[in-house]
Image (tube, rainbow, N blue to C red; front, side, top):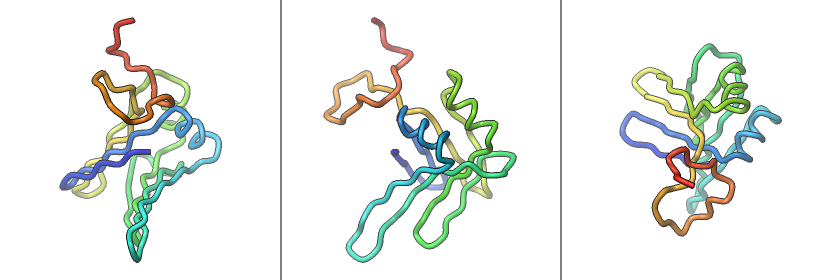
Length: 116
């Protein structure tokens, strides 16, 4: 799971296995361990109407409605946008990069812009 935070926007990208785990288990999380505290970011299926987010005790939790999760899992839908207060949200599938990268992309979704 990748997170990008810039000003009032939070973007989370999920690999194929992460989308599958989220669909099967209802939640996934990752963390960055700093010297004294960890920063945790998570996505969870919730009884909400739209994407929403909360930040509690060094943890960002993006909440996704069941209907959106079903589409993310079973269709070609790339992702969803939402808004909580002033914070713009984006949850999307992570595609293979078109340029060279050293990052392991074996679990990323095939990039629809690739010519094979």
